Length: 466
Image (cartoon, rainbow, N blue to C red):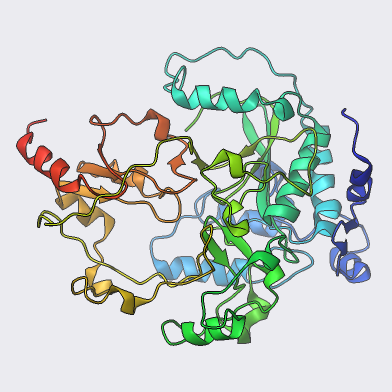
């Protein structure tokens, strides 16, 4: 076990965090869980199926598909949710109605998650990693995916992971990033799956945030935005906002009259696995440094502008898994305007995304539709939307990322169309499988400014047989 920093000792007091005392009423917590003190009473879905602590939930799920609920119609699904999810999934916050119990305070981490980890250690003793060998059919062996994982796991703070490093990473995600999922694997299967989201999260960048309005104020910014967008239920305290890529998240729920119903976080490739802990982050930036440099007006793609962590900084961490990876060390392509656009492309806007956004060196802003006037007749609406399976009727499909790599890419690969893949402009620019992709074999690469799009479409037409 590595020596803890002096400042770390307060963090190990599970009943209170570095931010101050939690607002849970401990007597109410005990009352909800009963006099027997069972820490898992009222929880569901966090343990392996055979260890499920809620017999009512287990019976309900088994009656609808034998472990994985299956429904013939939307109505059947809604009926199941109303009947079995409405009673609540969190023993202390009955408004939460997730399939899996989601922990929302550090007190819950201490009262539920820590005992759950100890229970798993007792029921499924940890086995030291062994040489499991490599299966002949393991398609990831000796690929860039495996090499990238090995490189990451060889970093100094991952070389010796233990309970202390797991707690370090848990605190980093809970207090600094807001949310995550702690996963424990024993004997090649998941035995603990515990989502968490800090309902009292406070960021460390609110003082640096500027608003793109006439006078730079909060009120003027959202006063103007109401002319373009629905009325938002914005959290008034900017310290309570969080980021997901370059998107600023600042609503717990859309309707202020239903604030008590907020869920904080929705719950909506195999190899042989050794016994382990890891934490899963469902955002785009999680790199055990200051993840959102753009909020401090730093360029996230320039390593020289990286900011070191000023809090929750430790000598060791457990691995953080994510769907997204990044390779920011690449040359930025030069921009060239297309003077004579070639009518090769049928592109429409299905909706205006007016969520708050922030990039380095600029104030927080939102998209103004009127700025698109004079560049052609831009209209947006659901009438332009094409369902995914109908997109398979097109020979070529253009893939453009959003504020990070788009999850839809894997689905596009199933359609049988040629994917024109636009190079990334963001930091979280790759999915975990992206290193396996081969340009001009499974996709046609396009410059990030679309300057060679017409040329590549012409090439595709001229080489139709390929």
